[in-house]
Image 1 (cartoon, rainbow, N blue to C red):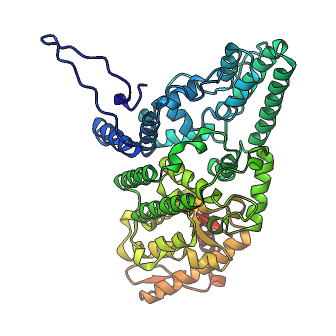
Image 2 (cartoon, one colour; image 1 turned 135 degrees about the vertical axis):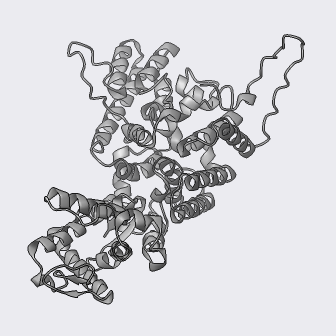
Image 3 (cartoon, one colour; image 1 turned 180 degrees about the horizontal axis):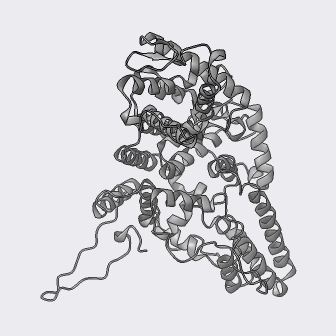
Length: 524
């Protein structure tokens, strides 16, 4: 795809049929910020406001790159991959691959590969082999939101193996960037000098060792994996995704974050999440700019496994690392930078409710306080909960009195909302809290409640419901009478029929799933 900054390259003079009038080239923007602004306005106008958030990010970063374009990044380099060359020019196809981390292996090892080769041909063949995606565009403009997420999750954690069927008699090419690179490297090694061969063997060993680490993450939730990997990538300081100069341009990042926030509002995301998102980007950016410094050389020399172990230990020793950093053993800028990258990239794909906060508690109760009971977050959860209730009734061959949440009478509608509002207090009795998913470390997340915890919550919910019904003028009776406000379930837990107890247990059992659908999680 053509460069997003069409004015950056000289234009061929156009001549009309009837005259020899030449078209004046557009002036190059004076700053990266102006280039980004002009590019986004042009693209929004061309697409009539249909840009996805991730496309806002792509267009902005393409414009930044094109504005800073240098014809030759490393004049003395033996070779350069087509992917890196396209990134320097700011082409959209290459930026797609960067944002989705498609060519992680090329990005992480290109310099070492080129240095280990004796000829340009060898370097180009190795760089082509280690790329997962070289030619076709990803066509983000044609993908729906779930497809965008699927594409991101295909390459994060980094792709190690394609796991697709092939000819057993083949040389195993096409099985993934790691396998293809190793095969190509082994074919080149025999004609290299001892020094070059040793260097290439070292790269192969490092790639294979790193691939084993990433294989451990393949079955893990993508965002949980990225939560662990992103700070390690920042410390390695190798891949373009984390070393790009735009992260150091506060004006550009602030402007793009505002455009993303505007897009989130346009797409109907809850105001509380949009405001929080913008605040967290600014917090991370401010902290990063204050602490900005080079990556310590000793960190860059460590293996991925060593860095992950260091980070894991730092999290254990500093449970509040989201707020206070990882401690003196790691750079002060690290948590700011990883949060900044996360809030720009992950939120552009998954939405603003995945913003990484410094103070997770600041959002924890906001969608649940009584004044916000009519918010779209609460309503969405109440609708989801009632839909699950209707489905469970149908599965047990019993009809629900009302087919949908919107059909509920006013008092039952209010009751459904109040049940959702009660979640934080009920979970506090178990020593848990509700936090945004993105602010919850995997080891702290409660994915499913234990049977004993479900029983406690079921009893608490029944007591809450009884108090609510009595306050509304209901009383106990052997048979249900809605008009007379009588119910056989308005009794102590011990006197409830087992089927009624199970309804409350199902309600408690569903809490993690209801929260997850809104980008929230239960945390220890």
